[in-house]
Image (cartoon, rainbow, N blue to C red; front, side, top):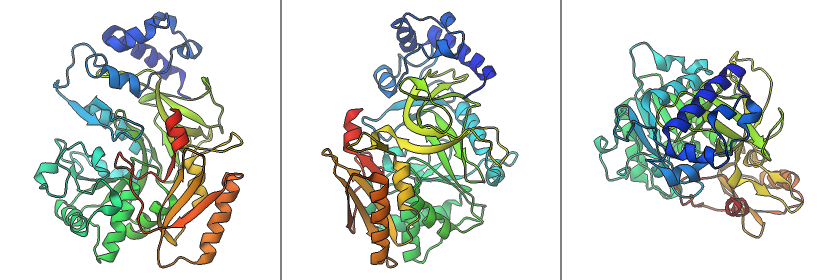
Length: 427
């Protein structure tokens, strides 16, 4: 997908990684390859993909480039939530993170005001505790304990989202009001939960600054978006971020509602069965960093699936448009061999004004259950219509619908709207 000029930068990244990191040199040599063997994209695909497993095993000494340590200037450390298994420790240069963020957010003109000359946005984060970057993100810690070196205030929330007590919710709302942020960086399901509570308590989520909201961490469902947009109002910029803790911003939603992938700061591939996919076909995102001096990554298999659209967007951005499909470990596998993506399940659910939150789960036997928490607007016809849509999407697999008053979060602390134990155990 990335252009020829970007590929030349990739060749430089390969050489740099080979010469300066222990892991990648061994990775290339195990396949009988050297940097000079990679002359074009066909040669490039001879390099076996790398993965989180490689970086987990070799972190830090094997993946940090020669001359760097975790205490080098401008190094920021991160720890993933452990969505697909063990948590991943990683690090990134602060200026690389900022560059990738600026490129991604640049597709959405409603976020331009964040980058006033000489200003530094004040940020509050409301996300699963495992994504907090602080070990003290509990309800009993002070605001000062939860302010990161870059000034981000991490708001507290229970590890099991729907078990968060009222006093902790009030504390989060009070801290937003006190901190007066420009930007909320949130998990959309978590933030929708906070807006429901704010309505119940007759509270606002506002700031004297122009408040922007970036959603990430998990799939932004139509149900969560509906609640967030209704609560925050039409003047509040809201955008869906494509990202990973170890790489930063991989893309963003433009002001026309399309997701764009960042092929300026990364060389991106969409791969299925070891081959690049055509536009309109789903593939796993492979990422190669460009000019990453700290932890260069080559053909990094993200485990996230997208469909490249292949059409220009009316927003005018040159970054390619993609459709988010979901993680490989969350794909629903049907008896006839078909795969249904979390995005397809979410499309069947729709905005569903009569429910607050849902979770679609496929167990190890293949049986599927759709649990949901209804609200006061729920009617029997709504449930019947949803059941019919899910049946059409997942046929011949039967789906059992179940109204509940509580749904647990994942072990990672994230609330995944669609999970498959078959897919999770296959990876």
